[in-house]
Each structure stands twice: as structure tokens, then as C-alpha cells.
Amino acid sequence: MAATGRRYAQAAFELAKEHDSLDEWEEGLTRASEVLADPDVLNFLDAPQVTDKAKLDGIATLLPSIDVLVRNTISLMTVNHDVTKFVQMYRLFGEMVDEYRGIARADVITAVPLGDAQRDRLALGLASMVGRSEVKITENVNPEIIGGVEAKVGDHLIDGSTRTRLRLMRDSLAERPVD
Image (tube, rainbow, N blue to C red; front, side, top):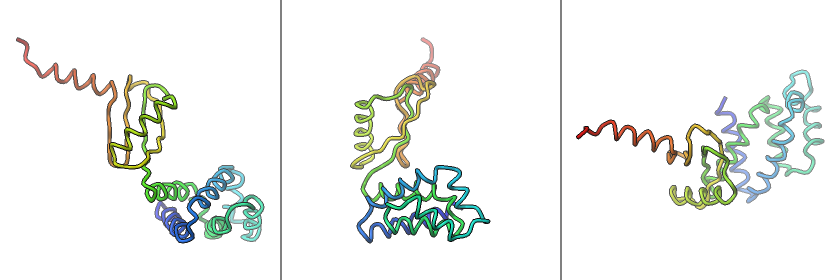
């Protein structure tokens, strides 16, 4: 299943690069993701009792202003009964574009929501740590880490949480003999 979304994403990415239209593809796929987020639309496009012509007409009606190659990709996914894999394809396409542009993605956990300035400083610091020009942050809040930040950027795990520091301190104190 995952391979199907990856194949569509790879084909779309190569086509977008070939036509020097990564931005147009991103815009079109973003617009399509908004439309396909509606369960009724997705159910219609995936319904076996609906004709391909009706589905293709629906796509043309719902997405009239996106690039024709993007619309054709969605149409192909629909006709091949793969439209339910669009979300995966869209995510993978975005990751491929970011990789191509030297942008990393980070999953970040903080105890409290970050302000804009904090998020910007964290993104710059993470970019420097992993050798990328930019880092896009997906932020999650977990009060259990007490403070600090935990981040995963690709294969890099960065744990600067207060919870971990306290645990390490506790373990260090437990190892020391009493004088």
C-alpha cells in the first residue's frame, strides 16, 4: 500500500522537476488536499458504482484552476482506484520537494506552545545542527517533559527536555557512593 503512494509521489515529483514547476505542483496538490479532505468527495471518487466519466467530470468541476498535470495525476489516481492514497502521496511529494530544496522537517515536543520568535530560533538552531538551510517544524505539546525541547529531524534525535535532564541527574546521584 505504501509503495503505491510513493510511486505516485515520485512520478509527480519527477514531472514537476522536469517542467520546472515545483511551486505550481505544491499549490495544486495543496488545493486538491483541501477538496479531498471532504469525506463525501473522497467517497464519491472512490465509489465503484460511479462511472469514471462522472468522477473525472467531478474532478474538473471541483479543481478547475489547478495545473492540468496535477489534475491529470488526481484523475489517474481516481481511475486506478488509488485516490484514497492521495494523502500519503501528497505528504511524500512534500518531503521530496523539501529534500530537493535542502529543507528538513522536525517533529518537536515542548511542554508549552512556542511563540513565533521561539519557533524561529529553534528552527535556525536545528538547521545548523543538521546542516540544512531550513527546518520546518511540526510542533506538539506534552507537559510531561516539564520544559526544554525534544526534536526529531530525520535520523537525529535531540533531547533537551527537563524531564531527561532530571532523570540523568537522578541516575548520576544514585551511582555516587556516600562519603
